[in-house]
Length: 364
Image (tube, rainbow, N blue to C red; front, side):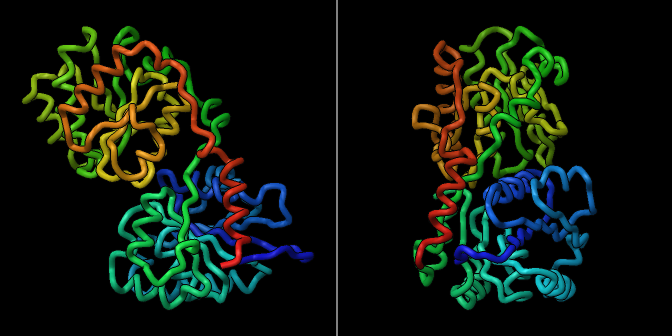
């Protein structure tokens, strides 16, 4: 898509916003161009200007269009005009756009080649989006954050060449994440967890697709076989909070389940957990799994979606099976060989840089 050049060029990275994991996603793609001839300009469609975001984006320049979510519904004509002005301001080689709205704006607002990065399933289930992508397929290539997301897009867009829809895994800067994580003792004190308890951790929105219902049911089944005083600690907030609390009461485990709420920069405190459990329904990737691994915490996850690409078969259990989860919790607690956990090399910047370079310069 872009060859070598003697002229200074820029990469335009266009993000929907910087909430949740998306600022770090911008960082991940900006570092692909470290020590190259390219400079990276990262633009956020929504969200107010923030110095913390500027620092966290690891880019040569960071701009904020400062639209509200309401303003970028519909045709997004104002955003397209702003995008056109930006593209005309310098020599951009191509655009990396995260999520569908930025892809839509980038394609309509410029003649640049566009790499669309997708972080979720189902982005091209709609017929209108399939038609749009196929219309621009000569200058659109797509990346999924896991093979599962990639395969979902390939199934929806059979008119694309398969090698124009590929995988580039999410990843973390292991050293940076570890540097900000506090000790087990500090983490437990901050979260209000007893120092001597065996603690199963979970992090995510309290939402049906995270399936904390199975998590609580499975923990309740396993609890009699776990050490006395064992706890399930759930970090996150959402519309199912009261329903999940009621479930813990009904199962008689309310004293063993701690709802920690939304914890700012929660990954700092992952060392508080003895085991990390992800029960999500078809998680596109599961960044929290890597963050738990960076903390040296063993992980288990449902055998579906992108999670099966992050954790091995021995650490997976059947989705929505509280019995399988209970068995896995009991097994993991009893296994004394789970103290050393490393982030697989596939999810490091070095491997990502190599894979991206090989893909971007290939002949389609």
